[in-house]
Length: 307
Length: 234
Image 1 (cartoon, rainbow over the protein chains, first blue to last red):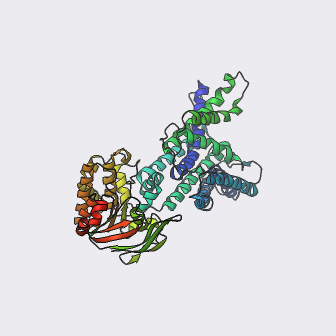
Image 2 (cartoon, each protein chain N blue to C red; image 1 turned 120 degrees about the vertical axis):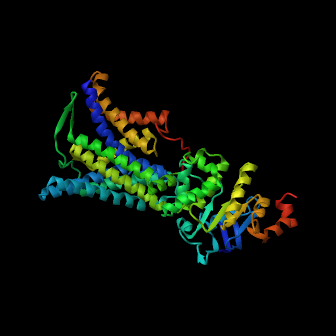
Image 3 (tube, one colour; image 1 turned 30 degrees about the vertical axis):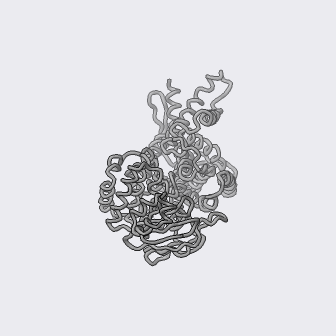
């Protein structure tokens, strides 16, 4: 029983991170029908920016209480600029191109960003500075740390903030209107280019936050880390129904829990043949299963042949 | 108020509108009638900057608007009710109306105008929290017109407001169009239902194969033998 609770907690933490990254995929898809495969790389660059800024400031003698927020701010602002630039340079010129073209461009941008990151930060694993206290707690036989608590709480608060933005503000209403019909939104006076840019910028900010959380959680980062994280988060977005904000949140948390429980029990289930390092299997079994049996996802509307 | 001079619209190599010139004076309702494919909707779309004109000029209150950014048009005071209505299906009726007021910041006056729209269309008030996609075609047309009014336009462009609606609904919609007009709105009305359009207008233009072939007082056009034969089924 305690392994179940333990893995549930681990899954919730990992799932919160997936959810934040999945929101970046789903916001952009919801508004322009594009899978921004470079989004995982944006997260990676956020993590590495945080390492450089927070780590550098710590070395310069700054206290953690200042270096940590500075690192987070650098990651968020840097990624917002990166997301804005990506849309401007890579996707806006292809707005009216066939759907496959921006998809291939996205994969291309992902490779470009990975290689740029390799040139800047090198090929080695980098240690992520300890920005949060290492204190641990024990409840009902399950162990969890302050970092895990912060990740879940901050993710939940951020997602609540995003929902408020999308459903309570004028920008949010313009985003939903643009997602349904860019041409009619334009008639209402919405600058559609700016709304699309806003989706990229907001998604990238959430990605940067997730990147800092991943770094704090695993205490390590690498220029290729965005690939698998991006794929998992994309899976989470598809699981929840791509284009649907609540779906991305639920899909992220659900995927994290499926993975954690899978990793916890895979040894028992296969008589010790497969170990917990096979946990990646679960995400992709989920992805294939959703695509085969419910391509619109758990909460997705049937959008038909959305262009 | 609206001056269209030598307007050309082309899709690929095909000329949809060939050098048409017409105008709409402040406070009047002008009908643009003609058969399907005559170029009426293309003309309206070019004025509303939904499509780019291939040539010619459009001036509104003395200002050239044929090259401005599409989303800037509504700030000049021109609102288009598009063909096929174009409501946001997954926004509620109220949210659709608020999208109509997107360019406005005067919260108090927006509430007043909401009440005005609900006054024209009580049905919308009953359904204000329903998703627009669940409305009937006629209700969606009401919503599209109400939404356009929410921007407080100086010129209302209506594209086929009767299309696909039951006769009783068409009557209701046109009652409101006439009420809006008599409250001082300037309206350019594109319609296939020529009789209804001319009965609701002061002047009319007849379009045929991309050009204007007849123009004049709405009442005179209604009596014109050519119009009667070609568009009124007599």
